[in-house]
Amino acid sequence: MNIKRSDWPRALATQPTKQLTAILNEMTAHWTITPVQLPQTGLAMLQLRDSAFNDPYFLGEIPLASAWVSIRTDDQQEYQGAAQLMDDDQDKIEALALCDGILAHQLPGWLALYQLVEIGMTELTKEQNLRNAMLTLTRVDFVLLNAAENDDD
Image (cartoon, rainbow, N blue to C red; front, side, top):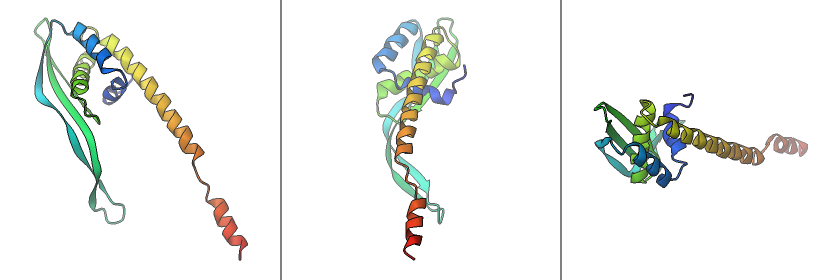
């Protein structure tokens, strides 16, 4: 596995929740899934520090969801998984926490989920490349502006 664990939720979030849920329901049919902590969705304040005086300020609110689950398999082994994502979908974050536990401990069926992670990372990479291309097109070269000012002298 060469994709970092911290990237799994973001990659899996690109996949439809219904698809994830269907795969998870099939995998975990005989397992017991219990929340370690109740799943939470809501708004979080994003705090930054200004560059001049290093004073903290709040940039604004962002949607945030988190879940932490315990997985008990058929052989009575217990594992845990958790996820946190800038989203407000409780069903999705619960599914992502379950995926994290399955992937992290390579439980039966983990390869099917890892294929979805790879697909998601490919989609995220394409999206980032598109954003970078758009950013490049909107870049302004101020060198010419400086040259025009010197011509007036």
